[in-house]
Image (cartoon, rainbow, N blue to C red):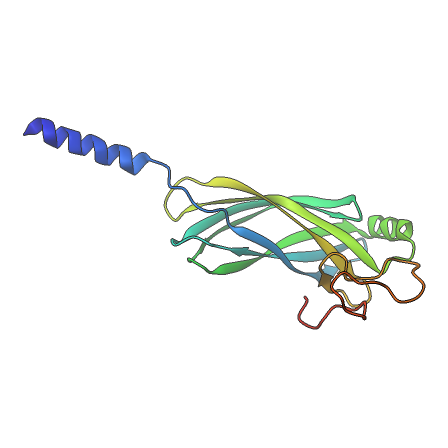
Amino acid sequence: MLRYLYTIVVVLTLAACAPIRITPPEVELAGIEVRDASITHLNLNANIRIFNPNRDTIRVGAVSYSMELNGEKIFSSVTYVDEPVGPMESIVVPLRISSAFWDIIAFFSRLGTYHALDFRLSGSVEAGPSHGRMASFDFERTGKIDLANGHLVPPGVLAPPHHNGPSPLQDGRSSPHPPDDYI
């Protein structure tokens, strides 16, 4: 009898130590907004939405990230979140972006006359069960930022710069402007 009890205790202990597998959280860029400006710096928030596709609540830890505009790395940093996300729910996490005005002026002077900027947001999110070990999940999102109105639009919606005449848009619309439901 004691041998069976010992076996049950060992099995339960090993089961408690077994890693809980979670589906990676989904990350998307929700928007970019100006936070504040000073004489020397411009501070922005790049808001990301983190969605939990799991049946159980997960905890989101650190988010490390970098952003490129037109292939040029603009910033990278780490934000510490430590927030629970319920099943099939999401949270919005503001990622702090700070840049010197001189760097911004230099970047835009190299741009020329673009109608949109290509962006690439990449990084990793630490996530895990509510009470358990965290794992790191990589993410990467790309798209365009429409400079005319600040909207994020899917690739191929805007006409290329210096384009004359109507453009053959990939989604079949005749207008190069994104529909109202885009951010």
